[in-house]
Length: 110
Image 1 (cartoon, helix red, strand yellow):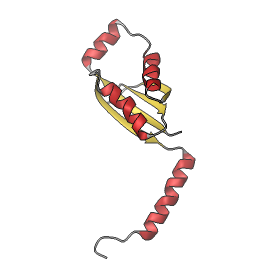
Image 2: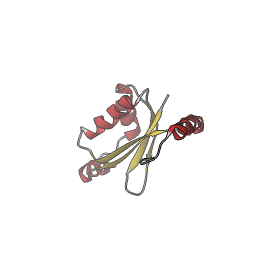
Image 3: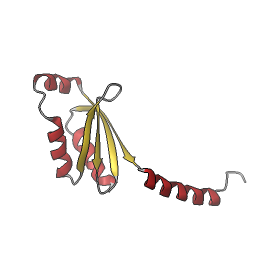
Image 4: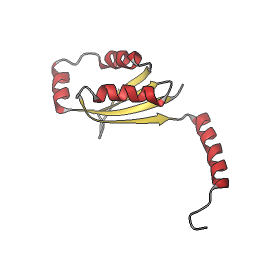
């Protein structure tokens, strides 16, 4: 099943609520992901531009988008970025397609 990573950053208001009532965000994210047909693999907090990242399995990009847009629609995040992940076998398949594409490619103006 395809895997996706979602980088997120909370609003200052959300952080204020988290400080007062931390709760179990992993359980909350898991429930939200499962409600739209995805499966949470991991939730990590981080330093940097993003506050955290979610790794999930989803049957397709539309399901991953539903997870992302669920969070976006709540007003609790200030930024979100969703990316599909590829394991080594999947990358090999992509690269095989690239070889075929390069063989058929014609540069502009040639």
